[in-house]
Length: 204
Length: 204
Image 1 (spheres, each protein chain N blue to C red):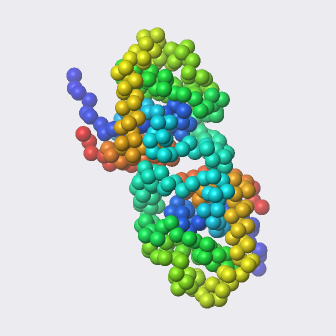
Image 2: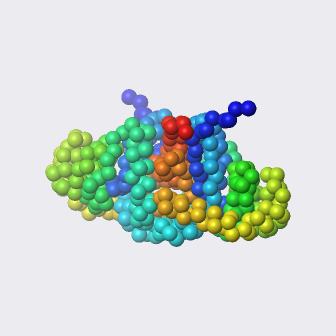
């Protein structure tokens, strides 16, 4: 058996409450594949990032919010992915992000993130229902109740906080935030730059 | 002689102080040409738009400003246009925008806007020097001193204010803002959507 060749990483810091993170999430695995890299999925708490950086939700400005609704639809059509504005938005996402970190321990952060993003931004589900999180965990092959129990571990809570702190320390102020090495890219609308940087990244 | 066939319009609302407006300006004529449309150049006062909508300069958040500097360089390389951060920024732009409206009376708003954007964002010139505005007016074929005198007319002042008010009324909250019909597109990073909309627009 041969060890797989190591590939350069793109890290994506995201929050399930961010619709532009959803849009980026639907594309990032394909971007990485085209560039010969791989994705590291890193949930963070966007509200804490806003607080730490003095940034704010774009939707706080009414005219910006109106444009955003149209813009999200345009991107979804452009990518040919389903999208509908969540009736639960803005919602707390800490519980789901902790389960994502549990999924990560089994190498399933990506599938869990994609399933959860779809639940929020395509299916209008409420990811703060325990039953919903159990369903999502099981959809990617985890033991649902065990995953939710593990999500309560202090280690997992600390890991989510550490992701968030690290994001802020590395210059993140919004979501999605992507890194290739130390290069920060903000927004699904910068995925073409991410792809270029990843294709040019040194092979580890 | 035949009258030229009327073509659908893309309106671009911009402020010379906005580097993303510069980036969009370098591309918009090519976008319009590919889509069989034409550009209407509409200077506005971005500070007044921010005030009216409760929006703010992205650079007000330090982490966002740091990302912006990198991001502007990436776009300039992507478009293969020169760019350097202006040492005069943020600068007042009302005087230059009034001259742009004078140029517009001679059908020269586009060339004047492009020359002025280049002066600010490629050549680091100070467009609040009268001599600089005279030079820019003359570069597009106007009588410099006469253009600057005309720029003081109440009609021109009112027109700049009317552009700004109209932008706010139509949902603009930042720059550049592009319209195809009533559809608003914000940012140079949405030019692909502008091109699609313009190509699909009904021929007048």
